Length: 267
Image (cartoon, rainbow, N blue to C red):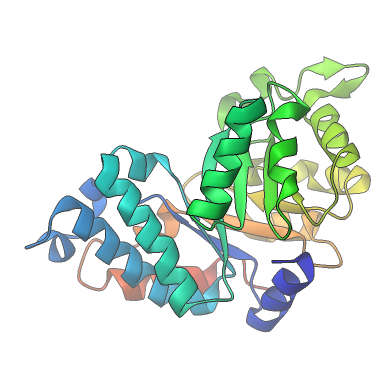
């Protein structure tokens, strides 16, 4: 997918919402668990959430940890979840929230796995080991590396705000990544809980899309993020996970998720 196609979806739907599929079996409604195995329940829950929210979002983001812990069955659920989106909602941008961060052949195999085997459009990457962790992901046309720059968690400033050569580390990371990439293969994670910083970040990074976690359960404001961080192509994928998919624990969970999606990241 290109940024132009992604922006077209944003304009068509009037939203920048990305729905996070952090599906925890313990939080799935009992009506879905009844008569199903753990893996089947997770898959059925995902399907219903996806079908309910797809008209009101432009992206889905499965967090791989919630599937890996189920072993081989969980990875099969992940594969079938992506296939369900591709088959039924083909305009959606699909992100592997994997936080990969290794070098050389390992990074290359991570890229092949997530882009070719599982057919994701983008992968989140931790850049701590340097640009070598990212470059293999830039070799796949139409796919994106999403580098963690300034995350939404409270302790992110332990490292991300450390000063190097007069600049905070997250800016050093972003500027280095911008040197080796283009906006057509690079995005950045910038947390919604840092909304006051979006205007400044946009000044030195005007063209890349930002994946923005932290709206909803973590307290970030979609309105503040859009006001400070939007660019001429939208430029934002505002993620909400728990705040949408667990909107209800009853039989109305899908309708509740749809209503929550309609309230989030619309413009």
